[in-house]
Image (cartoon, rainbow, N blue to C red; front, top):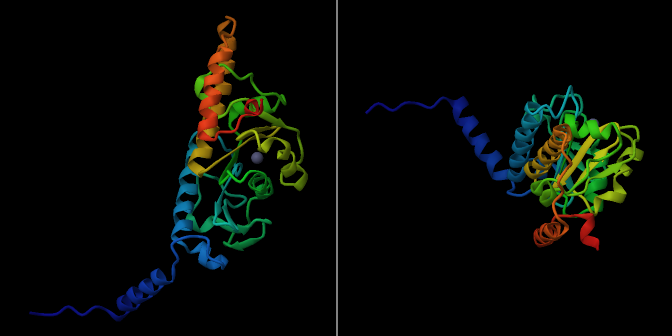
Length: 259
Ligand SMILES: [Zn+2]
């Protein structure tokens, strides 16, 4: 039987691929930034960031190069989106690896200037593993007024978000802007950023994006309900207590749980 020779270049490629696989570590908590960036965990998180970035763009929650996403990678690092790139056009190589001070450790692009905001949230709330910031139209309309819609009108919104905090305006990208959220982080998972947009955080990037959807849809429905012309019907207090018990059981933050 005739044997088919494998070209040398293909053999070299195969061996190089095997070595690369062998050098990879399964999780991103290795000591070196390179090991963390090359881990299977980092690869999965980059794919999730790309998927969520695409959703944000398709749902018109980001415009131009606006919005940013980050996620914790082990105890020492975060992966985050780069600056000056549409969230609908990202490739895995565009995602930056940074430390918790915001220094870039791996990646060809400059990190988002809003990483400072994300880092303040990670520092203030150990439950925060992923942060999504964007400019969804209905929530941002409220941010333009510096007010949040009243809570108590939609059960799902109450369960997963609840009364929204409103952070005062500061110039985006600055440390002063990043610090505007600090007083609110412990008791919320969503903050309206006055004259800017919204920031949400959760245990995963996917779940943080869900919060953006819930918040923007709530703002939209509230504006529609106001146009119906009938008085708003609020969920009774006793039923709000049941929702708060659900939130306590599942570890969702809510300023009313302090009572
Ligand atoms: Zn923004």
